[in-house]
Length: 115
Length: 111
Image 1 (tube, rainbow over the protein chains, first blue to last red):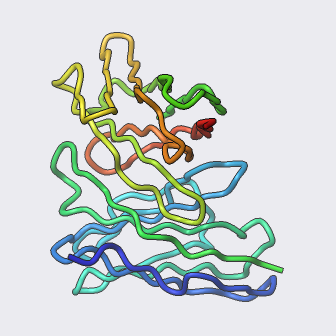
Image 2: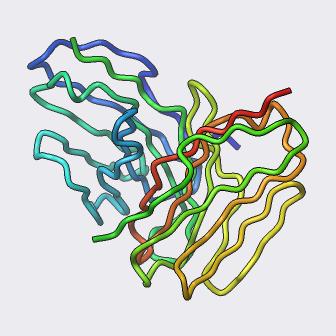
């Protein structure tokens, strides 16, 4: 069974541009969450989607947004990129978010460099 | 707010020795505690997890303990091997929706 797939794996953008990252969850998983990983801040929760609805959101500015499609695939968008947005963006999927002890499985991540 | 503290930030052990990583969580409603291993250039991989109704869980050389009263949980790796070298993250899941991660422990296993 295929794991969580993220595209693109690597990308370089210029300040002020916008970027869209894509995530395909494990087959059968309906919940997708996004994390930002940087050396200084560790793993920071961005948001979680289930059934095309945002269920929870972390403390990030409105430049960070996401959505989920009916097939559970998800995209996240960052507009007006800043140098500090350079990070590894990780997508994780799980069966459903409501049940206790729901394990999340990560993809390999998308490395974003803003220059 | 919700917080997970993880110690130490760096741990160096000799091959064959044991390694222990400790975490403390703040939200008493946390009910699920996974541990992830992240190798260079890869995403975090789940290695073991424990639920709030269990005090200890083992899987071969890896074990996790949970003290709900003290809000502490720990990862124990016995007979460490060079391939155990990686960054380890503890986490606590609150309310079924959000997972809060510790800052990570970089483990070095010297051959």
